[in-house]
Length: 249
Length: 305
View 1 (tube, rainbow over the protein chains, first blue to last red):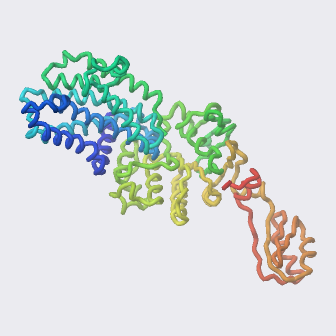
View 2 (cartoon, one colour):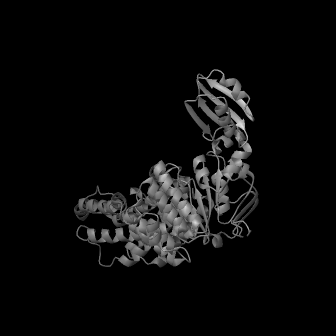
View 3 (cartoon, rainbow over the protein chains, first blue to last red):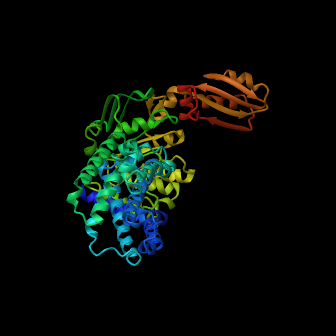
């Protein structure tokens, strides 16, 4: 069972890196966004220019990390839609593979590409965005992978409502970006209208942003147990809903 | 005779208000190539997927190699091989990777290299799936269906979309599967394919089985008429033809005459008549009814409708 999961994951990784556009889209774009933004804004942050948005002056690593999670989510939605439309999911299901193994392999591929992207970003950003020596990189990476697991599981729910592969990317984007707007990354959740606050409370990005921000600034996981609990709860909800609504063909 | 490889009894499957399959029953004997034939949308794939355990019928009983596919699907999967209609693989998976991965999923896999060899894919071992031709893709799917050395192989619309040459090559491969003592259950909407390949066929139309038998049996049962088409300038021939034993109709279009009659010796009777009366003919051919004609007789429409 675990052996099969690993074999399928390895196969999917090889297939993933064979498609240049997919690699550029999921790995290179977030890294580029980060490098360009930090190069552009860093000098002005240092001189205290007032026109730099807060999500860049204080939150650029958080913003870039959330972008990584989003690109993982969108690429998962696209892959599931393509695999479903091409009958690949159905063909895999007609083998002794368990349905859970087939979908878990996709999540693992996304988590590995998330980790790879983060590592690249840290390397690429070293010069333009020297992080404080006391930023707990390992803990931050763990927080990102944990958040991404919850966020990516939302992808199975979205993939269930996408009618065809052609609509996967636009519909995914349409669902995800408004969620990002409510996440507290750009505007503090407390200053949103009450209705929007209510929505923000069930959006995984809200807790991901809060957790990542805290860990980046050196707060322990202990002071973010609420975020961890909510991300876990949302993961459970997404998985439960997916089991009910997921379409294999 | 040992027990049938597949026993299907009175299954029914609906999708919402649509009845896809209704009261379908048939047996597939061990060691034969059995074809479920009918037009697109007749219920072939639904029936096959119920037997494979991929779908659950609303009603009825299915036994495959003595197992219940809905309940014992995992045990069954080890013993059957499946090729799905219009399935794809990952665009950039290599041929050997697919075969190797599939082999790793089963307890007693066959040799992947030998299968690649037998199916003529050795040159394509390292090719991506997306670069294969239609025939090569189908051969790969056959390899995947045979990777666990199954007792029973399911082939759903195996040659749809292939050119005649690739189709013939695939037919030979399917005969090879039977030769190795395996049972083959296939669906097709190509009557020629059913006639050339299947030991027995079940004709399905609008979700119901219309008749089951060997192709020859079905033709004899439903289209016993033979036709002789000949070209003659002899004006008196018409009267002679109408006196042939077993004759049912004589129709002429200019000098071309079609004679229809019943009985295995009808063609002989026509030849005897021509010889006896010294009727000169410049063309002579017989038209043997096919499964296509059987289908038309049984359902009132052609299979392509």
